[in-house]
Every structure is written in C-alpha cells, then in structure tokens.
Image 1 (cartoon, rainbow, N blue to C red):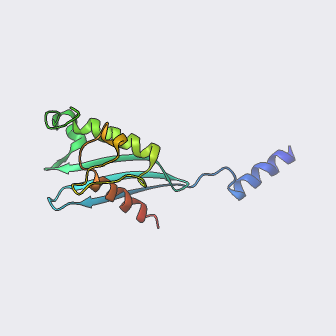
Image 2: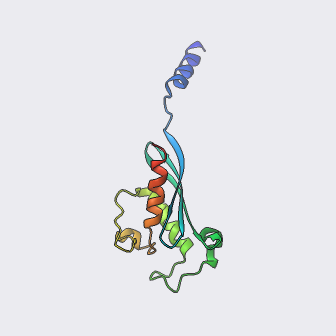
Length: 135
C-alpha cells in the first residue's frame, strides 16, 4: 500500500503523463470590417480542437447556420457552415503549417479545396493570433 501511495505521489509531483493542454482565442478583422474568430485548444503545441466563426452584420455565420445560404455561389455546392466544419476537421488533423493560400486568401491545397473553397486567410490569422497569445 505504501508503494502505491508513493508512486501516486511521485506522479502528481512530477506531472508524469500530464499533457501540455492550453486553450486560447484569437481574432482577425479584415478590410470589410468582418471579424474572423478562432477558439483553439493546443496540446503539446499541436491543435487538438478548433472552432471557427465570422461576424456578419450583427450576428455570426455559425449562428445563422443554413440561413447563411451560399450553395449557389459555391463551386462545390456547399454552404458556409458545411465548408467551415470541413476546414475545422482538416486543421484538427493536419494543423495550419502546410496550408498554402492564393492572393484572394483561398487555399490552393487540393485536399482542402475538395471540401472548402471559401477564403480562409482570416481564420488562419485568427488561429495564429490565438497561438501568439499563449507566448
């Protein structure tokens, strides 16, 4: 029993098995006055959770959900909420380090373009802002 208590005490004191998990929020305001927002969880310096949103008028695109209809304008026939869900999942799996953008702020990575064709530069900048706030 004493050995078990000693092992548990050492694990607590040493932080053994404890991952470095931090949460942060970042924003980026573009020239049109729209604000991209990112809530990010980092674990061992990698993104493990990300929630993205953007202001539109007096609300956000996530709150509007399907009402923010852009399927007709989308080359892949997907609404904003579908595309942002795809992007969040992509970033959680792959991070942002290898995302390449064109001059209009859209990804050039084929694996992103298969599910997200909207401009994403503001979201990337909001994620970078969240990460910088942890330093």
